[in-house]
Image 1: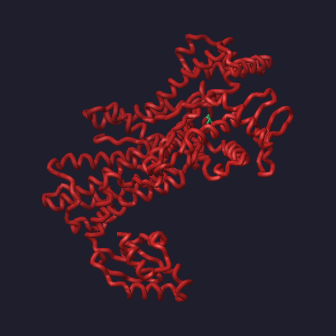
Image 2: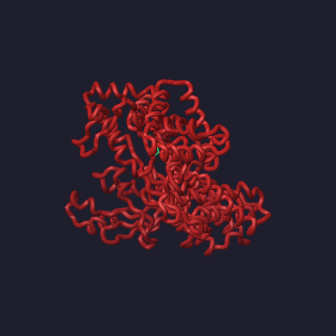
Image 3: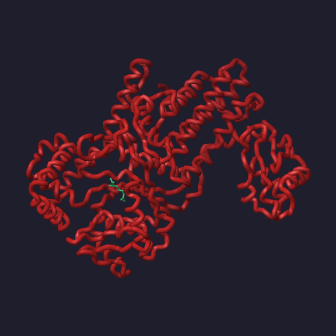
Length: 563
Ligand code: ARG
């Protein structure tokens, strides 16, 4: 329909390309302003006339085609009122397409997403939960737009902390305790190490020596490290299974340990390395940044060195169009430095294709959560609690429901994910159970409830079979039209989310679809006796169900038929 208007306008306005005309066409905020509006401000310069005058002249010159009901001029705008039926049908046909919302814009392009990336031997906390669900949603969004996505888990599995852990394990740990308690025990002895090292600094030297052994391939050191890694991965994978999140590559920091020499060499050859108190750095003062540390004074590599090696590896291996990094905003400077260093190495692409995607803090009851010290919060515990709470509600409200455990998991986990994705990334997220699980709030359960309602209506219309050949006059009331228009926004919403790396556009949209549907449902009885009316309304129920399911899926959230 919009393309028809573009063609129509293009006959009158030859000096603007069809693409630009399409960009200029607006969807008016109010129905009395028509279905499409064309503002004439841009034409004033070229035509040397006032925009309202131009609007009038163009409108008068158009022979109204049969798909348009009438054309009105309002100020500088030409407003198009489409013939209701053909307009509605064209939207509905589009929404009905199997690949509605998909596109081919990403074909032939690869995007690397580095997300989740928890630290081995530390708990998977709520901050990691956020990077995991944001990264997973971005993966779904880009895949929908035709990109090839490489999902990368850059585990924090290398560094001096493992030397400390080995010392702690040898002094105060036991195989049984680690086997029984896993990460919790590793965290306990890690904290103990710091307490003891305060009293006896020689422990630090011992730890450094052990990490050195690791870097030099010492068998004993590596086998203890590998054991800690496996134990941690087992716990992390339990969280991923709950969330339904998968990765293409578990290439953690340790993966790059034989790839950092090449980076150091590149930096040296480019004349970028300078000495600073025995350490090697890249000076970034010209760019108002602290120097990027590359080698410590004992020659060991650090987080940034391994990130530089990872970028080189990913560019060579995947030839990415973009590489995204989803981490907390406290790592902003780190990525700015690393990206700048890549650029200084002569890689122009660093400017546009390396992108840090920061997000805000997660707090529980207003408290900042920390990984070490007293209040250790495990993401897994939060997810399990959400599931248990939903399970209790089901037992009270719908005790005969089939697959209660599956439903509780999908709704409970979905509620936590939805809460993480509902606001702009950079905003802090707070956990408040009564809000997150409220089926009447702007929440996951509200959207899922609406989905289940659509499913239930369709179940009760056993004889219904889907068709878009309905009498559109019967769904031309305001709330039906609003619903159709809302559903047709889906592709645009996906693009906005992709362009700004913001899954919250999708989450907000899912709420808005659910609300618009519930208004429609309130105003219109669906299962009426009149078959024509019933089929027309069932069409909208079935399209709503589809768009909700697809939106939730882009957030990494499932839907259930009954709850
Ligand atoms: N392991 C880090 C953390 O938990 C996140 C790693 C992010 N990715 C990267 N390539 N630096 O904070």
